[in-house]
Amino acid sequence: MAILELHDIHKAFRTGFLGVRTPVLKGLDLSVEAGEVYGFLGHNGAGKSTTMKVILGLLRPDAGRVEVFGKAGADRATRARIGYLGEEVGLYPHNTAEEALGLIGELFSMPGTKVRARASELIEMVGLRDKRRVKIKHYSKGMRQRLGIATALMNDPDLLLLDEPYSGLDPIGRKELRELLVALKQQGKSILMSSHIVPDVEAVCDRVGILSGGKLARVMDLNEVYAGESGEVEVTLAGVDHSRLQAADYGGTEVFAKDNLMIVRCKGDRKLQNLIADVYSSQGHVVEVKPLRTRLEDVFVDTMKAMRDAEPQPESKEGEPAMTRR
Amino acid sequence: MRIIALAKFTLKSYLQEKILIVVMLFAALLMLSSYVLSPLAVGAQQKIVVDIGLAAISIFAVGLIVLLGAGSFHLEKERGILRALLAKPISRVEFVLGKYAGTVAMVSIVVLLMASVHMLVVTLSGSEVTNKMLSAVYLTLLEGGVVTALLTFFSAFTSPVLGSFFTISCVVAGHFSSDLLTFAERMGGTGTTVIARGAYYLLPNLELMNVRSEAVHGLPLPDGFIFSVTLYAVAYAAVVLYLATLIFRAKEVS
Image (cartoon, rainbow over all chains, first blue to last red; front, side):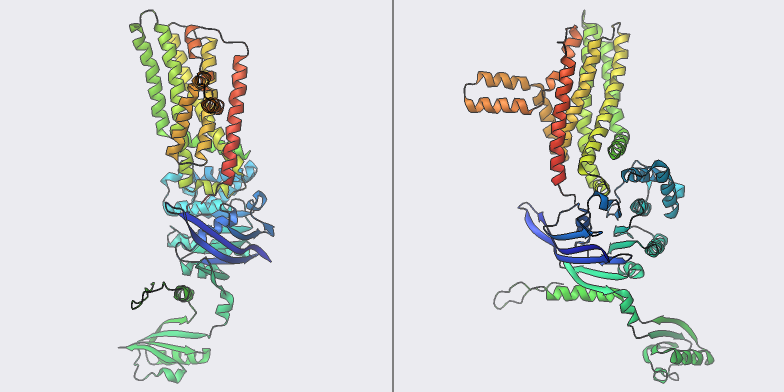
């Protein structure tokens, strides 16, 4: 069952002195199922944040329909079930983490005891316990982002809208957020997460939509993509004599060979076992075995290129080459 | 509940501003200087102290509303606070009222603190604190409420600079609005009369909230004056705030 649906959303902004209308969304259709983590990919300025604001009713679409929890638009009751983390965290700088979460709790009409308990739990979860009484203006970008995540979770939302949630986080913070998102998914939360950092999306999302040209250029079910893969692996070997070890003997192909280093691609568990056994028996060793997967990053880049190529080229004057965009 | 929460946080954000302390210190200094310099005005020392003190309270209160209020609205938008708040189950009307209440609370604290210093200076100068002085302070609070409503209205659709400019213009014109009526009566042309009369009724009559002369010279106030001015100020602020909420509800938050 879809928990969030956007139908043919159009949105343009007036820009410049003359107020020329610049379209950002041009017929966007999007659907997020209950309990699903949906990755919303797109380059900077593609319209990801605009989409989130349209969902929340902060911006009105020029055309199209938004349905959240089966109801048109995001009224107050609907917003009470949504957690939102925007591009900027949006917190009063003179507040402490406890105070900021206290305000959010009051806005959700939560009773005082529940606000304090929930705030304490979330501060612990995002790793800000030692800084909970420090003013936010003294926080680093990553700490503010962690607190922003806590504010988005304050009302224990059914739907989370996260706009670039990994922004400003250090590697530990990114790892913890990934784990948190997986945990939230296991709790049955629905998440729409925008990003232009593909591996972060790839790590947690069930489905991915690529926004380009104001509409979804491609939607992929990552589980299906990975399930349909060949099972081919790439093996990096060291200390082997590549003139004696032939990749073809193991049903594979040689990708790289220099000195005593070799990279071989092969398929099938039995052949891989034989290869590894032979390498060790000839005093070599295996450096790495990694599955050859469809990389979302490649799909993303290919999709963006395809969309760019499909754009109509400006007309050229006779005898002059048409300008191409890169 | 949500309005109170927003008002509380708005007030707290104002109280963190260093400029607030600076302005209040300056106001206190001005009041104390009136006490020190008043012997120069032979025979009118006490009047000088009361006049300068009450004028300082009114001017600094309005100044702080414009200075802090306009910036506050702008910063909330710039820092994404507005967007984050409006993504929560809070209506635009609640947001406007919360901001208004927080700003009025800040002005009330400032006015009451300055009034306390003023009363101290008056007592030091050997005068008594009269009911009329207290009335003047109360009416300054009402003026603060009206000016905050105007600032809220202008902040709903303009930049901080323009919002401040329009508010100050309204405050200045509001203190001279009765002159508009006199002007309209003296002008013969229908068009000019209509425009002048329209401006008179549109602008807040802030001079109604100025009883400094009465306080300084001990002149009587008409019966029911304070009550009727209170009604006028509350009604005017309510209409302006209603218009502000209408504009703010129609506004997109990008």
